[in-house]
Length: 394
Image 1: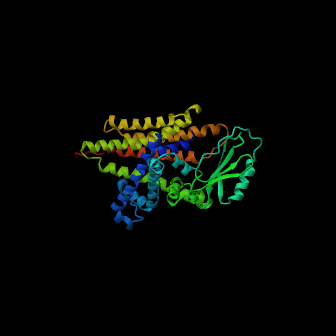
Image 2 (image 1 turned 30 degrees about the vertical axis):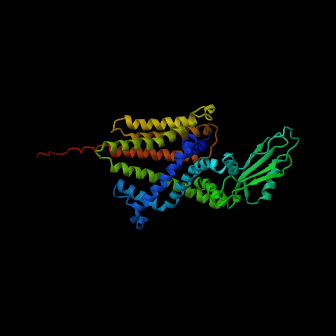
């Protein structure tokens, strides 16, 4: 399983299938509510769009940074929350309403959404088939605004075999799952065409959720796509900083609370939030070190859930003064660095270089996590005693 697919599955469903997808969508609803609460709480700060007091202590600097990211990134945060919530909850609504819309045949709703299956095989061998390069060239001429991304064959050795070209259409927010052209494999005759442009308004809006949520802006053209993907990445990193700074401020405010329930909630927040980062980093490291025959199995999801649960269990069992968050973030940083080294080493031994973007990102994340853990350790260390000079009793 490639690392990108692994992270995508983690983001979509936490490796627990459709229930996990619904759960993740509920976190999208939570993000929308947090945005609303943040706007109400920080409504007086709209006049301080550039204030960041970095010279008056870490807590005040993080407070200002939290407000700045929330204000400047609010449109993207709302986009992340709304599209994330609609993705899973919309699928749940489709599943629940299918028996109402088609009482005799509930599965028909998925045929209406995704299109009919390819023509069935006739059991006769295919004597010759059209050249696929010529078919792609003809499809580009027939549909000039269509950009092919995926090609799949159905019943390739049968006379009824077909080929499907899936892609995107310029100016139409959709994905290759909904923009498809099907041709007969024998002679290249067009058998059918599916597009979100043929759907109603609400269905088109639902289809547009995925490209907007996952920064799939190819439908806008190369220039706009690259710019918006970069902005999307920056806002995603900003959202991570927003969560981290908000959690830190919340924990600091309740650090000295005498209530045992508050201390337990504080401990669980450290375990599950920092544990999520550590489990994801260790999963990436395990992906690099595991044998190839294990990559297609269910172990990545199980490993992630076990590691995350172990972090939550540690929050309950370890002493209250044990630096749990610091330890988990340090482990996550080391795992990110080790994963980058494990990926780069085989390439360097062959005298070649892979695409360095993912590895540089892992190295940067690892360095930042280790630095943060080190700064926490430094802040928690007792001040050094001043050296005694002279006679204080003189």
